[in-house]
Length: 272
Image (tube, rainbow, N blue to C red):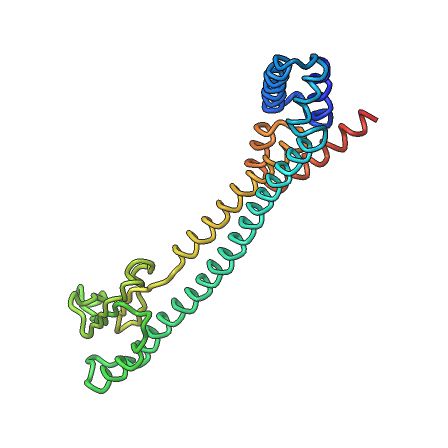
């Protein structure tokens, strides 16, 4: 089977023969050609003629390398698409996450402004008049505010000399509105308070800070994983250990790519 062995060697001469998958493909190709040549020989052909016909039927000396090259190109193209998808996801997540972050800054600032405006309206008054309630209600006209309660702070004497300020347990004015369905799912926040010597305002501050963090971290994670897969496939086609370099890419990302390029240059210098 000299022609078959020579043919298989020529087909894989530019391939990395240390790879297990290449060895398996070589063996499968040889076994197939051996069986085909044996069948042809039984029809009355010589061994040399049978091997030559089997090789020609299999595709000659050029078609198999072209198929292997095409498969390699498809794998590289798939890997590049993964990299582009990762970069796009990272950019979109950064844009969406940072956009929500800055919008949350606006939300928190607006809600704090409402509380400060209500305190300005209350001033040093001891009671909340109907007109003051209307003014506060107008200030509260905001979709971002969920709750706002106004409490009176009274000065209670401890003795003839010392007194303390005590916040009433029941609010003098209360505002409450339910968030939208989307808001109830994605909005987060907590209670804050603003006060003067006479009044305290508690408000529930809503924002998208947590959601923006999730979006940014998710985009970064997807990019990191897809970049690592791309780097692993790239290392595979450069006849490097995909597992070893896959771990390096997973741990160091772009730095891993620089390390791989430096490693390849060092190997080329040593071989030359």
